[in-house]
Length: 156
Image (cartoon, rainbow, N blue to C red; front, top):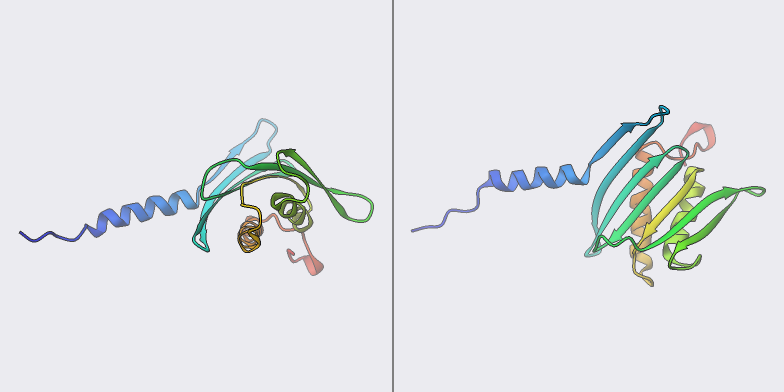
């Protein structure tokens, strides 16, 4: 008896579920009228799976980047400071201010202009993976409207 190939409809359902999970976006109305937005997605980069979660709070972004696991990783807070348009970064759990997550948090604040809390478990000494993760996160933030207006009103 010949075995039939797996049903394309079962593969199609898996693809639909995967796509839905990758593009999950939830918006809830807060008591004070503020909106909390949650966006989750994943990307495969250089044989590593990167998982992302972005939570938009009032005047703040919480972002998580997981690499091949769902561990929280080190947690950093970054905020714009005056004078001189600089960014201050602090390690909240684990890591130090010169680790992967701290650099990403600093650059996200520069690109969005708002406070960022970032959790990341990207391995140390993986600059290509770090750059790819940051690029994907920034692209998603800009597509969600979180980019800081640049010259002539364009997002930077």
